[in-house]
Length: 220
Image (cartoon, rainbow, N blue to C red; front, side):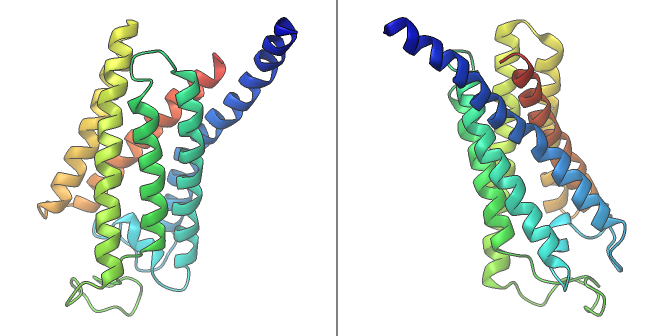
């Protein structure tokens, strides 16, 4: 009876874990493809001046809102897959916790949108809004938590790969974490092309998390 039970868990467990890891693997591609498709096609949007979050404003804002929520759900599901795949290994506790936080933060960022500003959507006066709405403040808070968790996940994964002897992946993980910090810091300081720098930094880190999930999926 015991042998039968163990065999059944072995047969079904990996399938479920692979599905969850697939969700995390798909999250970054969905974010990058949908966000950039809008960035290059929506009238008045300039990635060197407007953050990707601002795509959630205007008549077509629902697309970016849906993207935030979808990616958030994928990362939350993926976090469970990461917890199972990394159980008992370095980073096996904090990596899934941080990625789950990223997922929750993305959903919150979609629920609470930025204010229109700096000429976008078309017809909006140039320059920043005169004041920030409550939902814009909530969006900034959600974004800050998301960026912090994403950067931390990069460093935790760096430790994981260092402990497992994968030096190249350890370096990439830490670079991904630094990319988020630099991108966010440069934007907050009002640096030139700050929104573009932030978009690159966050996209790099998200892509690395999805890559790690994909690699774990193939070994589960």
